[in-house]
Image 1 (cartoon, rainbow, N blue to C red):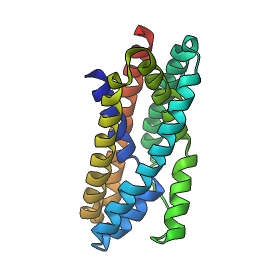
Image 2 (image 1 turned 135 degrees about the horizontal axis):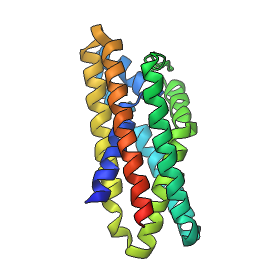
Image 3 (image 1 turned 90 degrees about the horizontal axis):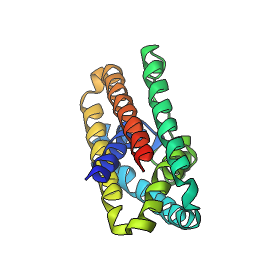
Image 4 (image 1 turned 120 degrees about the horizontal axis):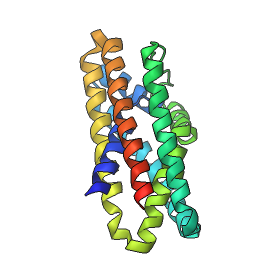
Length: 203
């Protein structure tokens, strides 16, 4: 149950934080092209996650179990640090800016997808959060860690679609709404980082 909650929480944060793909989806939602918006919000992230899951699964099988805890500690510390900085930055009103992104074209979506692949947060999640979880699956069975990834998928897509709909609906107060959305996401991320760090400490 704790893995399901942890995965869902991480997924929700990922779905609420802005990225180029979500901004493309927002422009399509604003034009009432919901089929394109849903496509951008679901298909490219699913391809990215599938590639990272396959790579991380291989990495976790080669990872010495003796260093798994240290990697998990690093993950908890990094997530907590990102969240703390995000909240501090929001207080200074510098993070409430609109994310720029390419238009809805094959090239534009490809560039936005590449930006998501190379984003530091993506690598932090898969290397320091997901990899230790998968390594745990080596010893306790992979069925034990499935709830983490199921929760992550449900949390991400639910939050991404819901936040895009809300931002499109509240276009007139976009900046104010986005500010509070980012504040909520970073506060949730801070709680998740601390809980993950405690989980790593407890083994």
